[in-house]
Image (cartoon, rainbow, N blue to C red; front, side, top):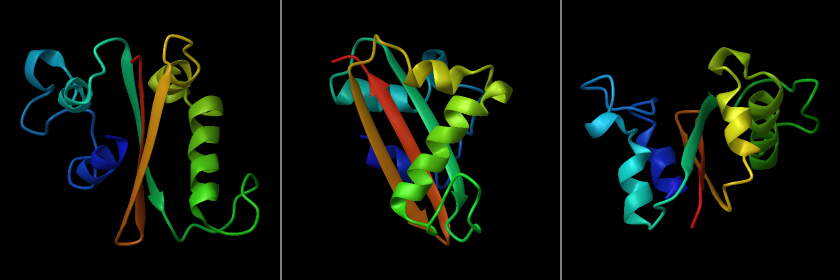
Length: 120
């Protein structure tokens, strides 16, 4: 599911449908996938995109790799999430979630990643 969402955000980097401010019933785009894959309880989503060719940062040593991008995203969600009112951090640290899926897609030197959190 997370891999599928990482491919969807290439053309619509949003939690919601481009056609309106929210998907049907005010639910995000991941809502249908959560239902399809059997996650009826709590659920949340974190999405990110960044260039594969960014120079090394202070947090990332050893160049760009799948691991470095995952660490960079995690660092941003946990420590620099004030612009989203700490929603990503709170979702990742929410003890109600017992399943996490992570997906990533590389297209045109951009990496699109998702973390899908739910309760099975």
